[in-house]
Image (cartoon, rainbow, N blue to C red):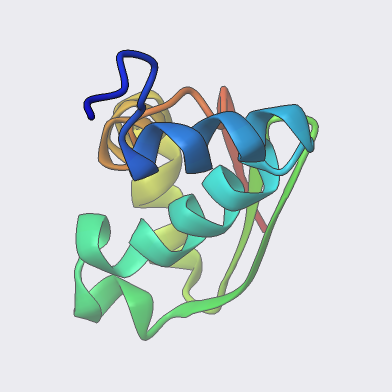
Length: 96
C-alpha cells in the first residue's frame, strides 16, 4: 500500500528544525565550522574566538596584518561563507 503524503526524512527534519526555531542556530554553527574550509588552514591558525550576533560574524585574529587584509575582502568572505552553508546567515564580519 503506497502512501501519497509520504515525505523524505530530510524534509521532515528540515520542517522540524524550522518549526522549533533551531534552523538559525544550526546554520550559525555550520558557518563557523566552515571558516577553515573557506579560508584555509593558514588563516585558521591566526583565528581565535568566533561568534555570531545579529547576523554579524565577530572574529578575533591574532595577526594585525591578516586582520587588515581580510578587512578589505569582507563582502566576498560573507558571500563565500553564506554560499558554503546554503543560507544567508550573516550580512557582515567584524575583525578584532
